[in-house]
Image 1: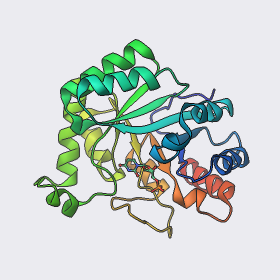
Image 2: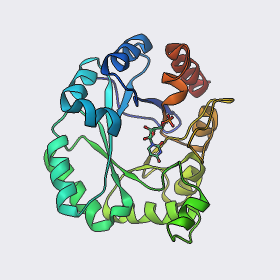
Image 3: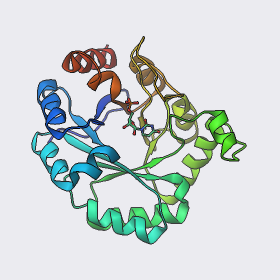
Image 4: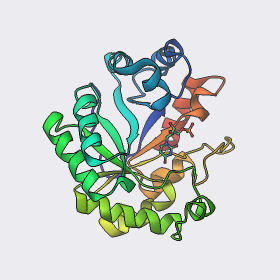
Length: 238
Ligand SMILES: O=c1ccn([C@@H]2O[C@H](COP(=O)(O)O)[C@@H](O)[C@H]2O)c(=O)[nH]1
């Protein structure tokens, strides 16, 4: 198992494996080598391949971020965490907009099943902008909404958040180093944004204070994914 502790100014890469076939994902991880410490399994692959696939990735020596974004009533979320918390995973997501009580129940379940597991609260998806929030009837800007959800998450006892790089500075100003901040929506210069709206480059993400960046399509969609991993890692370590 790789070391999961991050010092203050480092920023680690997490590869999002939103890939059709399990064999392709495993081959990519093997090619990326030990430099790549983290793999994220999301809804696409977990719903297709389930817990055994999680164990396969862990057996390759990777830390596993299980990105299920749980969002339901407190009891249902707690029971789901009791189930998946037994898997060899280091990070798991829930939605902060499930509310304070849901987060409290989630933490209680996580503590009972796997005290080492980092529970992360998703704030405002990086694919959303001001207009997406307005369409939901939310009057706050993404930045204000994230700030509000971060405070709620802290009150509930959470110590990790998923947000965009654009909110990292504000969260750090308000809460110091309390949170591990995991930021998807990261694109190397010139890469397609796709559906991501609030984006920055890997170097900018490190500069603002992200603890981890999550990158998927710019890596697994590249002609040489292992080279893409190496290039992003070099940018983070420069
Ligand atoms: O706000 C969020 C939360 C999670 N994600 C996930 O991160 C990756 C990003 O993939 P890319 O291909 O680099 O866009 C993906 O698995 C999302 O489910 C996010 O993008 N934004």
